[in-house]
Amino acid sequence: MLNSIFRLCRPFLAGSNLVVARLTAVSSNSGRYFKRCSCSSSPKTGTTGATGRLSAGIVIIGDEVLRGDVRDANAYFLLKNLHRYGVSVRRIVFVGDEIDEIGSVVKEFAGKHNFVFTCGGVGPTHDDITYAAIAKAFDQQIVLRQDLWDLCKLYFGNDLTEDSPLTKFARIPERAESIIAQVVHNSRVFTSCLVRLDNIIILPGVPLITEKLFPVIVERLGLEEMPEITRELFLSLDEASITEQLNEAVSKFKDVKFGSYPHFHGDYYKTRLRIEASNPAHLDEVENYFRNSLPSGAIIDNFLSNPLEAAHRRIEILAAKHPFVREAYDVVCKALRLYKPEEICVAFSGGKDCTIVAYLYYAALQEHVKETDIKTKQNWLYVRSEDGRPEVEKFIEDSVTFYGAHLITINASYKEALKQAIDSGLKLFLLGNRTVDPKGDTLNHFNATDSDWPQAMRAFPILNWNYKEVWKFLRDLHIPYCPLYDQGFSSLGKQSTPNPKLIYVDERGVTRFRAAYLLDDNSAERIGRR
Image (cartoon, rainbow, N blue to C red):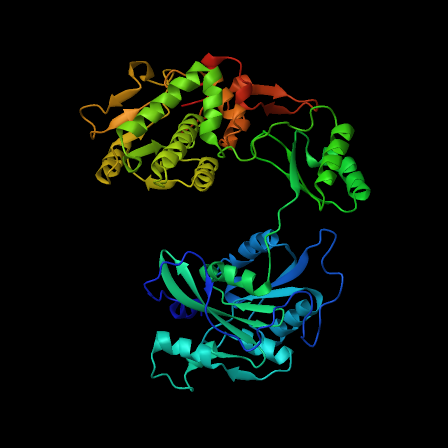
């Protein structure tokens, strides 16, 4: 089903260079819908809520989603983007390919919410029944819409006859509006469509098409981007410790929405509070309430929720105070002057040292992009070993997403992996080795590989850093690091164990391990590493 839809919407090369979705054709019912609907079950009043937002329901359709064969991405995309445009999603329902169930849910949502968005069940196969289900729910006939039928012929050939299964693409509820649009993907223009019945927007199940059609939806519904009035507070206390104060705040501030989210990995904070209001003054009132009702120091001031934002400026501020930061950043910037970004690679294994190098390079590359206007991703090389820890693997995966890096994973020896990386065009490798590492005292900031290794240049930005400087940098900038460092590991190798110098006994007599950054003895860093 999904492949059929994607074929229908494959690129249509029109020689255009559009940069936004553009509405081009046509409807049988062009009146815009705001807060009233002509469905047989009209929306109830009072659906906008305390924040003045419109309401919506989302229906994700398809047995393949319920079986887990396909991972739904449409709901997340719509949630995030509808919120930007002042629409609050109240419910999401996943339903299978059952006509009566689809129709019942859609009709219920159409009567309760300003908008309903359905995704899936649009296509030529037996399980593509969304149009039929909605038509039946609203006592309408299914009719062949000529503009949609012409679009089918454009892609599948003019010899199509009306007994072809492909007519299911063009058979929609009789009072529905067909909207054909040209949208852009990878500098190409393709023609796609969506169908609207009053306050019901019917979308295909392919996430790419939903994303590309979203500007058309915004235009048709007359939505305007709504600035968020929100604030986040990061707390050093867990949720259980703030429950009383949070419950009191919910009762005290009726027009404010609260979200409380525990944080289990990394000990920068333990709870994130999200506050949303219709008036900026309410945010100050709520924050003052928590500052007065929670213990001193519970709210972490100046927390960097996005440490990648303005990373270059933040490093420059730190470098002005600490020569070890200046030295390291100068090495990375020099590497970017000597080599092109596509020739540079970070050797990333998930440890604290290579995490710093990745952040330094991200910041330098961020500034390089500003100066050259050439956008590029970091290259990372991960040499995977058979006995790698799952926590490290997960952290690497999360870090690739966080930094937007291009990861090259090679299952081989270091020498063979280096050869493969060099053969792909990489010339300089940024590494996190320090003088405390084996043979680290023989290195300089820039060193070619040894004569019996594949030939490339290596750069060691943090070569002269000590253990405390490593942790100062990470924690001052709130850079995410592998969670094993909060579980007693001070150094990660193939067979590392927690550092015994971090053992302590808590108030209940349970033996635990402190976080690695609390280790006072620089010389004890590699205890527990084998």
